[in-house]
Length: 417
Image (cartoon, rainbow, N blue to C red; front, side, top):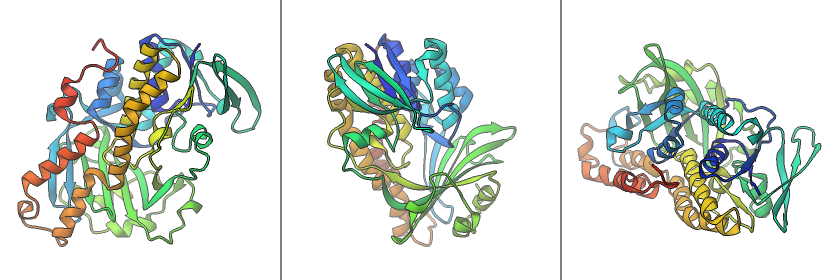
């Protein structure tokens, strides 16, 4: 019997491609009637790029994204705190990518359809419930827009890849409640602007209270399409739950906090003003769970471990989930034992990463420097030594599974590469 996958996002599509590679039958059920390239920029770390390369998708990644060359941290005065090479320039055997989320999703969809046929994905069919059967699981399908019943499908196991607001997670953990807001609102957009630093740099500027993240996701002639995120920490009275998830943002709500952030390496106010559209989101995650797997049902990706977009790891961790689960289903068969083995390997480290990101992950270096030198500095080494900066960066890499030597020498998850 087939593996049933709820959700055709990045994690669900990667799982489908991986199961096809492993020779395990599957079907994907997606709630929306048409997959479209929605979203803005994300980063894929080398450990995730490796898995997509092993799926034969290197050319597709190069088509929809840029190979990241550097990550750099700056004070609110625009002074460089720390910069390090990324991807293959750092010594990894695989690159890091800055990519449009929707472009990556469409590339994965197209690859899946080319390899497995259009019937591999059923759109307009949300998985709204399930029941265990003697052969595994029977899912209930519903048209999310109309509420119309669409019947059932039978399979061996059900994998919930249905995102941060997972219907399946809510049924497995009915007392959990809504996603957790840590107090930060994000305004996001893309702007065609001048290339900065290497032209392939991910930059973080400011502090947790007021931060600006920017990186290119495409070349536009001599310019870059710059993906940017402006973060502002709000007071406890801010009524974020009354906001729409994709509410159009207003410049007057956040631009004044960045008005004097015009630096010789990037004019941040100009980048903000140059966006075609701006969207406002609350920065949310979910508490780590003590359990993902219940018999023939388990969680994967954001449904299992939605995390703050700190350290650029959300999509990457979902890709790693998919590969580990595909291996378990291949080796143990599509059954509860495979799901338990997957959870045992993935849940502890990714739960630790969720908590590390709540502590601001690698971006914490911005707050440490700001606390020591609130008005800026003449020499960063007098504020934070090179050794301390290197140790700080290495610590997060270890938590996130991004240690260079460990990744370069680790055997392939699915083998054959």
